[in-house]
Amino acid sequence: MQDITITCLCDNNVKLSTKYWGEHGISFYIETPCCNILFDTGQTYDVLSHNAKALGKSLDEIDKIVLSHGHYDHTGGLEGILGICSPTVYAHPAVFDKKFKKGQGSELEYIGVPEIKDAIISRADVKLTSRSIELTKSLYTTGEIPRANPLEIVPEIFIKEASGAMVHDTLIDDQALIVENKDEAIVLLGCNHAGLINTIEHCKKITNATITNVMGGTHLANAPKERMEATLRYLELEDITLYGFHCTGDSASYILKKRRMDAYEKGYVGMVFTI
Image (cartoon, rainbow, N blue to C red; front, side):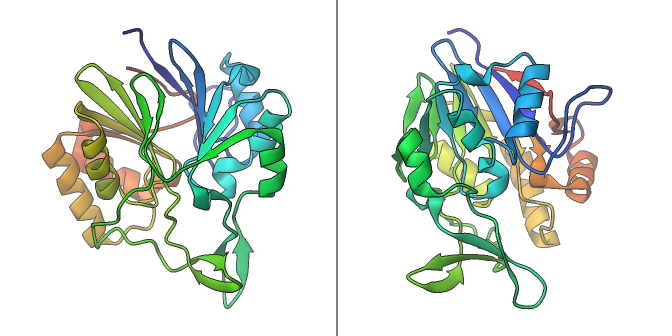
């Protein structure tokens, strides 16, 4: 099998001494032998396109886009991409839910997909499913991830509109990617609202390959101590190397590096991973 190359186009952090731009969001450009796949589109097309050009990646050659979930920092570049090419877009059916975040007091901030559903569907072949699907040989979506671990609950600051009411958004649309190469597999995360343990355990039911690396947003930025300790124990038990991007946060990155040493690295725009 030929190599699959994964390049980070958008993240909060950038590789030092480069002209890449950083922004709150994430996007990975995945080159496979048969097609190019974009996993999430960052927060803005300006940053996405600037970094793609600087890294020598052609956004108009994207064949497929996978959205990890329906938040603005993962879907903001989608409108710009649809203006230059016509990729197939894959996502969970709840990706277009009207999503909000609680601010101070009773204020709600809209954090959902910037463009309305009808506009996107009119410009792209959109495939919505909660199931795991094969995007290409050795590359799969996880589909909807079961929430078995009680420590990995979604905070109640996340809200969505449902049937005219504002309810807790458990972000059931959160999904990841699995990339296989023979007996080895990596898991690629968007924001990981479903939780690292829940996500990896679900991936183990989809792939027979050994999961050796996990990379992407981990949503450990404000994780309680009990959850962080459980995550550290799990990563050690599973012997997984973690690359923490986006919503991992500086505090969690410090703890992960101190405890996991060579089994943890902080991610950034410009990081390239080949499997």
